[in-house]
Image 1 (cartoon, rainbow, N blue to C red):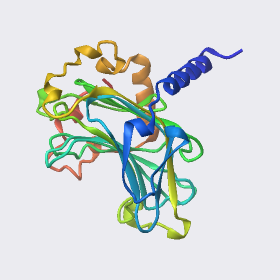
Image 2: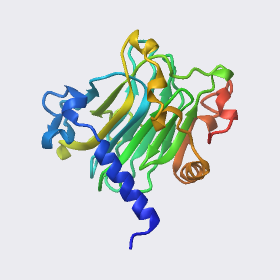
Image 3: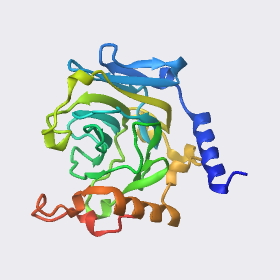
Image 4: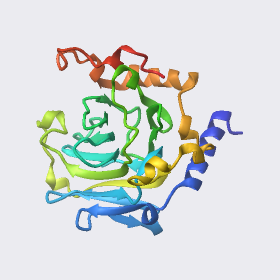
Length: 285
């Protein structure tokens, strides 16, 4: 007999697989000169990195709010110097951006999961985490929920971070600019691993990251049409008003207490003029 928790996990996996998109239909490989490959009829996508170039892809559509999921298996072994990404971004000097970045490391050392939020061209909202599993051994699901009230970062449906809309405090929040989904694997050995002290070992190249089960469930629009396309048509979409319940808040506290390794809201030396106003509010909404 399956336990209730196992059954729920199986159901969630089935639902995600059933709703998963197709890379041929949903994205374009935009750079890498053949280093990005769509496989298995559009069900899988791999990105590779060597000493000459990385690779990347982007969603065909722009979105204003939604839920964005992908299953990802990171570069195994010595991944020092590499950065694998999954993020949303608009264009221009005052762009908005919601980041998942995975900073590689030498064999046996953990990845750093780097998150950040930009609004109107300003970031400096970094939080970094370790993971409670080996992200190179199997696929795991990484998700961004973005609605007018909050941004939720999830790993295997466990919240690791919430960035709430605090415009009432004068904190900009990304809500007016449509964003595309971007994913990439690239060389950042000038900063990615231990501040750039550990460089990429190109004898181990090519480095390969694998993506599957992409799910882009959002308000697809572009340009002026975004202002006129009402979210009312998404009344049944869970992401439209998604927040954390008591169980989710407890899980978030557990993740942040056990696995957070950097929080901009605690970096007093970096911000001697004072921490950002939202750092004084609840972090678990």
